[in-house]
Each structure stands twice: as C-alpha cells, then as structure tokens.
Length: 181
Image 1 (cartoon, rainbow, N blue to C red):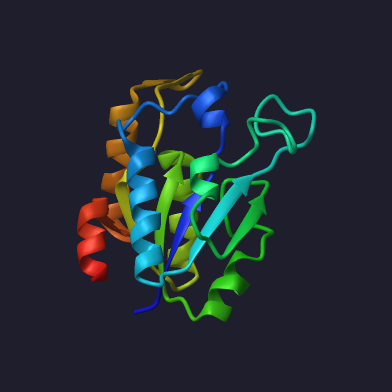
Image 2: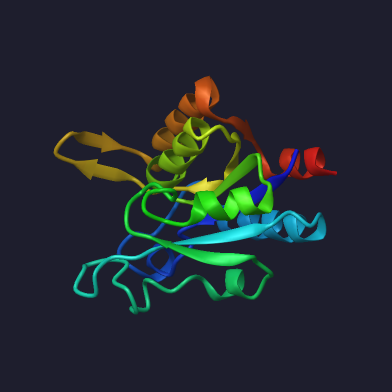
C-alpha cells in the first residue's frame, strides 16, 4: 500500500473569511497531526488550493482568503495543486502526480467535508484508488439555502456515513496514524 495525504483547501477563507469552519472542533489540529505523521512515515503530502477568479467573493486568486494557512505551509509537502472546481482531480495534474509517485491509496483531509473532500474522495474511488477519509481532520459549517437548513454536525455525519457506504474507509486521525505504523 502506497499512500498520499491530501490536505484540501486549508485556506484563510475558512479561518478569517466569510466561511468559518466550526465542526468538528479541532479539525485543523487533527490535519496538522496527520501531516506530521505522514512526514514521519515518508507518506507524500499534497496540498490542494481552491482558486476562484480575482473578482470572486471568496477564494479570489491572490487574496488573503485564497492563501493557504501558514501553519500548514510551515510543514513539509510534495507540492501545491490549484483547482477551480470541487473535485481535486478535475482539470488538474493530481492524478498524474499520484501515478508518478506510485500511490494507490489516497487519504482525504481538509475543508469542506461535504463539498471538496466528498467530491475528491468519490473521484478517487472512480479512478481506482483506495480512499481513507479522516473523520476528525475534515470539517464544515452550518448551511442554509433555498433547499433547507442543516447543522454542521448533521452535515458532517451524513457525509461520513455516505462515504463509509461505498467510497472510503472512514477513520479518526489516531486510527489512521496507528494503521500507518
């Protein structure tokens, strides 16, 4: 088994911008713990960054909200891959990067659980990768739109349950670290 850890969209927008991630508490600390463990085990870490046009309300390329969190950037990683859609594989070099590294198992962490993490995990499974989804190193926020309202906790849990049905092995960060050793 050759793993790679994806850290998806851990950008300032989710910390100081319009979309503050609230659930689960401590998700960012768990991501950093996973990155540190990956680096200790020589598991490649790939950072994914969402990029919107410069005039966008959120994640505008070059804006403070678009920047990756500095604590994440202070750790070792293989590369940063920019994407424009929720799926990290769509119109990016992610798949070729993973194939070059000989990766067969993709580990999902980052933001938001129901959007880019879920989409990327599904894409990875469709491409033949085994997927591990870190339950406490992904996160989201309360959502309300014309279709309804859902709490961050309910939304997060619904995605974890769905991921565990078919797409991923859902694990805590501690369970994942133990499995890597």
